[in-house]
Amino acid sequence: MEVNPLQYPIGRFQAPEQIDAAQRQQWMDQLKALPEQLEAMLAQFRPEDLEKPYREGSWTARQVVHHLFDSHVHCYVRMKAALTEQDGVEIKDYNENAHAQLPDGKHAPVELSLMGLKALHHRWVYLLQSLSEEDWQKTYFHPTRGIHYRLDRVLGLYAWHGLHHLAHLNLIV
Image 1 (tube, rainbow, N blue to C red):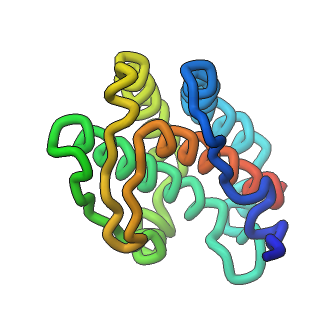
Image 2: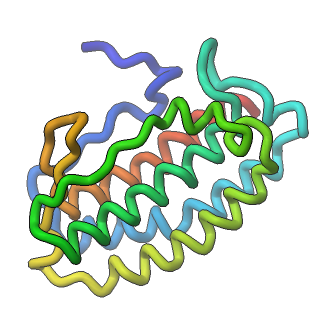
């Protein structure tokens, strides 16, 4: 299936078959760098740019920034559940489009989510760097998708997710 380059400007996430410590470290480095990369990109935006969608019918730049925070908070909580509850714990899904339409998603200053991402990513990476090989194999169950996600794959998915949305924002400026 062909990928829409405006929807997936860096392509879809592809997890390698084998995920080793070096790969995980690369992904943790990407997570750690995301807030500063986002801040640098937003410094190029004019106020009116925040209200522009990255493609027809998409979220605005402001909504993308707030979505990054919402989504990454959910992932952090899901990973902690996988680490502290039974393996394969069922996580709660959320409606990301509905979240993007709430007043904080549509109108709040992007600085609020940027500050949140900075704190969240520092704490998240701190946690991730402490995980054992056994921890990385733990899973959670996503009820909407019907998939058990291993934590090492989740790390890669969210490192990709940040880059994916940076690429969306780059389509605007």
